[in-house]
Amino acid sequence: MTTVITGIGELTTNTEEWGTLRDAALILEGDVVRWIGPAAQAPAADRRVDAEGRAALPGWVDSHTHLVFAGDRTAEFGARMAGEPYSAGGILTTVEATRAASDTDLATTLRRLRYEALRQGTTYLETKTGYGLTVADEKRCAALASEVADEVTFLGAHVVPPELSADEYVDLVCGPMLDAVAGHVRWIDVFCETGAFDEQQSARVLAAGRARGLGLRVHGNQLGSGPGVRLAVRHGAASVDHCTYLTDTDIEALAASTTVATLLPACDLSTRQPLAPARRLLDAGARIALATNANPGSSYTTSMAYCIATAVLQMKLSVSEAIWAATAGGALALGRDLNAEGAVGVLRPDARADVHILDAPSTVHLAYRPGIPLTWAVWQRGEQVV
Ligand code: NIG
Image 1 (spheres, rainbow, N blue to C red):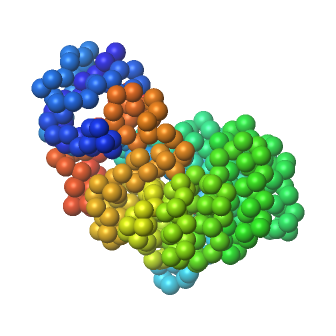
Image 2: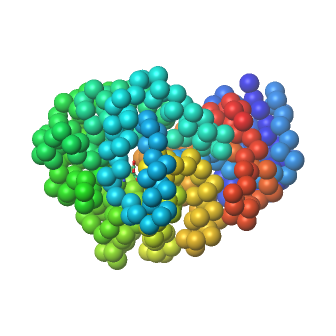
């Protein structure tokens, strides 16, 4: 079965070879892109969709979410908007609700949010454990996540639960908990921050994950300057996420590394923190990704478009830099090769057929018309889902 999407007014490919094409067409075959080029030269296909001049781009790659949770933190959000500071302490509220929830309830929320994201053009999504914090709860959260998400991260080292000391808990995370989740996850992550895990504890978690063959990610520099970026770069992590508070040394270290700085602007705004220094990172030569950090505490949104608009309007990225970070950048943060067959975050022959068409003539509208739902159609693995 082949589909030709023709009449594309502006096609963002994120590739050097194809760049941004006008009056373009794409042919999808099975779950990959088969052909790309000028609409006038498009070969025939079984099915034809006319985009009537709209803009098309790769589906969003949301490389940082926490969708396995129960409960609600509206009151905490309200208090924050009234002036209370955000602290990682609220995580334990969600831990309590998640432990008490049934698998069915957790799966329902997970699927609802995954679908909410897909409807807005997110065709590839990572999610994490981290609200269970017992062996049994982390294991079921990992298993549920693996049924819905494209990539699953083990974040047992999110915070220390009240029933254990930090050292006892790190032993548990690096031993029985890691054993229990390993079959369901591809990544290990640690929240390296005051109030969560210190540098030494975080290094132990990363080393244990690496020994089990997992890829490494770090939550770091979210609430203040600290060792997160240094740790991530030293361990060759694929990504260090948040990066709200960076020193010049952090930025230089990121620029000299392959570790992606994953920026979470919706979280920075929702926690009333400064926005991460995206411009300084790009100007220094670092690689960045933009992601939603969807979770019930610090960032309750699945909207990548909101992150793009914020990145352009307030973080001083160009529209194309923001789009690249929310697609190809996210793919790199998840260790995906942009040139491989089935690549995500790019559109070219043999890439995964994840296509997002906007109800707008140009991607500039993502920032020019902030807050407007612009998704017109979405293909995921070659199947039209919106
Ligand atoms: O990425 N930083 C730690 N973890 C989440 C917070 C989740 C919460 O507050 O529940 C984050 O922001």
